[in-house]
Image 1 (cartoon, rainbow, N blue to C red):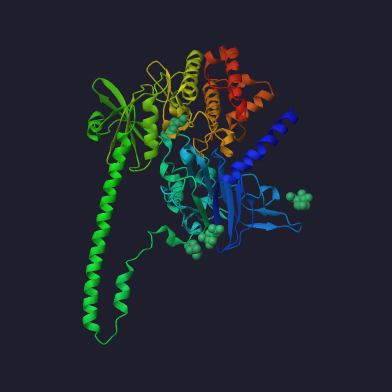
Image 2 (cartoon, rainbow, N blue to C red):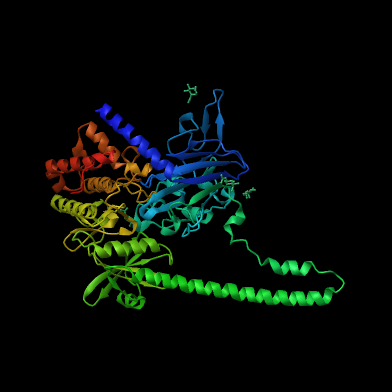
Length: 585
Ligand SMILES: *[C@@H]1O[C@H](CO)[C@@H](O)[C@H](O)[C@H]1NC(C)=O
Ligand SMILES: *[C@@H]1O[C@H](CO)[C@@H](O)[C@H](O)[C@H]1NC(C)=O
Ligand SMILES: *[C@@H]1O[C@H](CO)[C@@H](O)[C@H](O)[C@H]1NC(C)=O
Ligand SMILES: *[C@@H]1O[C@H](CO)[C@@H](O)[C@H](O)[C@H]1NC(C)=O
């Protein structure tokens, strides 16, 4: 067996090398800090010592798989007498050249070369905290245009990090420190960007953080673009491009003093005219650009095929009685109840005007073209000026999280086993449709009870496709930056090799939550039972799976045998190796 796979690998090797030498992207990592940084890069690069003013050039092959890459700066590293290095942030077992990920707090640059439509994606992520200021800019090669600008963080970590979040060498993420839903956004209805997590948005407005997960934190360029990662970028980089109207100044200062006054008057007169002309030019250009941009947007929406109904903002304002009845808050916006003729609707209004457009389009395109009884139906949308709204069918019983977790103040009786079984089967059908039956393979990537809605008869339907990614059938993986919700993330998110099997894992978590009537990550519990899935491992070892069954439901206890079968099914889905997890069907 081993011999076979080795020889197979040997055959493959020349091919890989061939592809690798064909196309490569250059990432130039420059340290402009006044101190030494020890950057690490995975999977290509390893780690090195980078003194101030020095650059480290990475050649990242585009092997066509869109493999995901990460770079993070390590700080406070030192070497022992044997020359072994260790760092405060990610010491990789005493080796500077490491293959693992860094430890918090570390600013993280993430990028993917050559994924769908031959595009690169890149971002700066603050999910592991913040230790070194970073800029990540595209260096467009000849002919390559269509890049978005790139994120740059210019802040003073020392003075801007609240004392509660300060850590040696950096600033921790509020989620890491407080481990509470509202800082980690595990509970969508309770995810307010708080003072603590907003600090990160202020320090690095374009970066991805728990309180800033929108399309505006991911940047994109055509493949073939090279990149420049800068530690401690100069502050002036963040301001507008430096092209002052130079001619005015020079004409004035180079005149001889003899006929000074007249020339000065003429000069400044000419200068003044120049200045006015220049201002008019700039203003007009901006207006034209804005017009062009608006037209492009209209085009974008106009070209969508098979899209659902288009509403005006006014129509939806009337339908929702000026957004009076708020049903809840979900990814990217609030949801309001409304009435269209005799149909009750749910209108999702995206909060941040002008942002999340890519998610919006993705959602309109995706859900608009697929129909299944276990997927929430998109009735229509509105894209007017900066307004972005989605109109869904109304789901009277709300989201699943309102029904499965036990709470003292909850008057509703716990769901019966039959009902829970039906809900589990509905979710499986919805996912199986997305994964296996659509024209394009679709991974949901944020399967959790808050995104599972219930109709009058407790039929479950998947909602919130804002985070989904389309996967072409012929590529086996889609690689994105970390998305989804802590507690439901499959282990492979750490290496970012993401397939629809990540949904299977999240499904396993949801099944366990439905069975035991508690959240996977329950911070109100003691340390040893904080994690439902860790508890599951423990109960498997001690052969006491029955301990995990919802104790508040007699009906569940009575069906112990069947419930345990279902737990085993969940365990099948929760395997670390994603290839061993079953298909949803
Ligand atoms: C890398 O970037 C630095 C700083 O911009 C520049 O001085 C250097 O020439 C670059 N190196 C390469 C090989 O592009
Ligand atoms: C330090 O280096 C020595 C020699 O290379 C090696 O044997 C040892 O395991 C290293 N120690 C650590 C803690 O990595
Ligand atoms: C950052 O802020 C601290 C405290 O206000 C100050 O002492 C330090 O000089 C600042 N650092 C920089 C690089 O501006
Ligand atoms: C989510 O947060 C809301 C608002 O604080 C709370 O009422 C609800 O119980 C929370 N849900 C869960 C599942 O913790």
